[in-house]
Length: 166
Image (tube, rainbow, N blue to C red; front, side, top):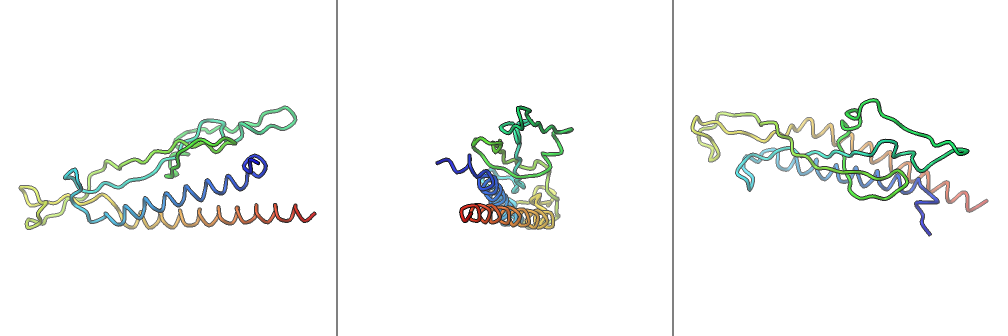
């Protein structure tokens, strides 16, 4: 039995939980490397973030009401890209996501530390471009989203359980 076909709430909530977990892992990696001035490439650590993109009309493409297909359009695709999350895979019922982990190309702050092993000729060291405050805000947002998906999953479980008791 394909549970996603009969109980789409489970599949949607599970996808959301997975996305937020992956976002939290990426945030943790950023925070752990916030003070890293040299990676394997010899450059300072660059902040990473995730972008989830969906095809237009994807969320409601498989649902119809009395022969009429419902559509969802976005006025500007950039509105959806500001939500920095990601997951890979294709699973139908409007849950397909194209996921990309992107490295932030902004340069880090230059700090004068002439005795640092990574300092340049003038004595400046380029630090990581990770902003701890920004990462903490992203972490709180991801935590709240995770909790919301968990609440939705529990509500779906309760509805399924209650429907079996009828």
